[in-house]
Length: 190
Image 1 (tube, rainbow, N blue to C red):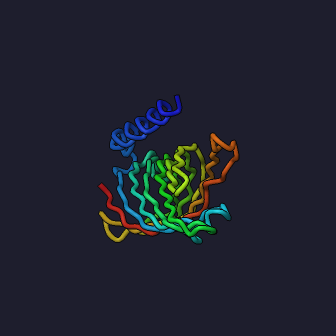
Image 2 (tube, rainbow, N blue to C red):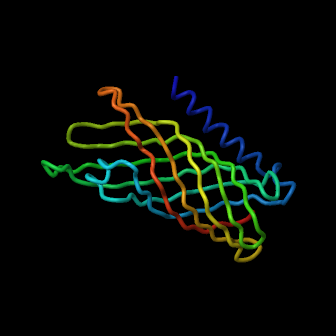
């Protein structure tokens, strides 16, 4: 049942993006951007096995609903390898956040931005004792800025906090998979 719900949300995000051209009548803009960054997990166990942060890449597409309001979707890929604390066995953690957002902006060429975000975190952790997969739903917020280089290109940076709760089906323990990420990217206005 969860898989169907996830598929419906992804389908809604795709339809939102396909309809973005119609939403941009107010400003005539849709944009696509790519960003790299680091994510700092809020879980101390993650830091013990993998280190302080996990590097990744994010892709984003958005359309202007109003001159000051943007609706969009983003997806990313973050990956990190580490070692267990006792036996020093190799472990791997991968995550793919798929998010929908509403972003407000203030300014013209240099814009301050704030956003509310919701979506899924598809993750996989592989170790010598097995594999754990999950796709918890979560939410978050971000603050950032965008700067237009010219009519077509812009640079953007943001600090985002995401909160995902995952309940392990075997131990029933609840894990916090969220954290903060800082990213910098470049985009194109279509």
